[in-house]
Image (cartoon, rainbow, N blue to C red; front, side, top):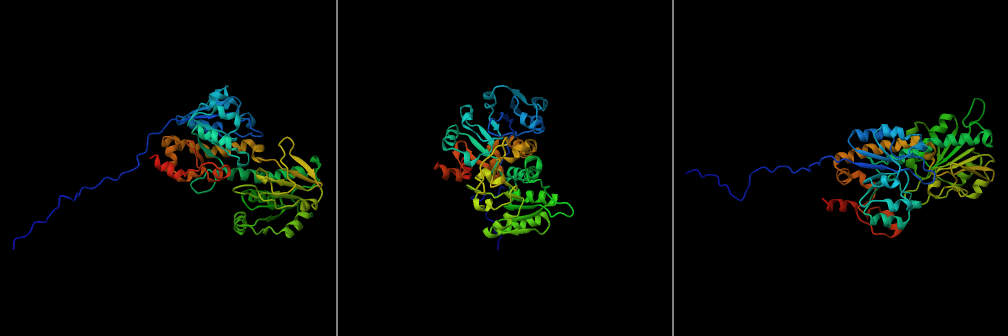
Length: 404
């Protein structure tokens, strides 16, 4: 029997197919503008001279407005030596395709904004207005917010740093207002041998609460922490590495503890809207005269019923004999440290954007950055904002995919 030849059908192609890879574009040269902030109490600057120096060494252009670094004691000379170009006209800074601000966009900025500009700045949800958003949408702006910016690990690096600063600062502020020089009670925050330690109550076991607790414990105070999330209380105990007095928010226990404390810190956070008010006016009226309330949650409305916004110039008021410190944006009072923290996050982000050939390519490759984008080429991609102002919401993932 003759051997049959194998039959090879021409409809099959046995050629190997090349793997199709996403070809990385050539790096782009970024033009970055840093304006001087005119916003109320904003002392931070989003890029330090050291960060500017790294960006310039990597071939990017940085333009900075005259005296923008003044509140942080960074001089124009520091920036020009780092390779930035100093300009005296605000409008010229706003011509940069990428704008880096340490305060939110305000009405005065709108006429200066360019079409298709990328703006990296905070957004203060409480102060945001529909008209402002609408005008930014009309200019097809891409907006990246500090608050929602995520890193590879899924945490919010800028918020975390600001919370660490605020938490650590809280005890320094408390110590200052308990001292006699500020008409305080004349109590040393902490404890010395033979004298019972100062009692500190912290509401909220987030990052602010954790860093406030660390600072208070380091000074020798006795610390009691309230939070409704058992997970957060456990995490705080693990992070600090010792057993602590913790409790859920039970009004009777809370009222009893507030009656006898020297310092009460409000560090509750709310993701979407106003912070819940957990301490009533009556609870405050029963507190000891000369004790100090520091309401870090004032940025989002405050968690003490007696809280009212104060300023860095006039930081306190006294009600029921209790000193209230309710300054929003506490990190701005420690502007240089805060600027370095923000800069540490933004500088690598800008470098990456340059390497990828711009922000649009960067968000295609780095999925975690998408949470930080609230406007993409004029389309509103933040669900909370669209709900609040009844503006059209667009899914960012679909937008990015459709442009590929």
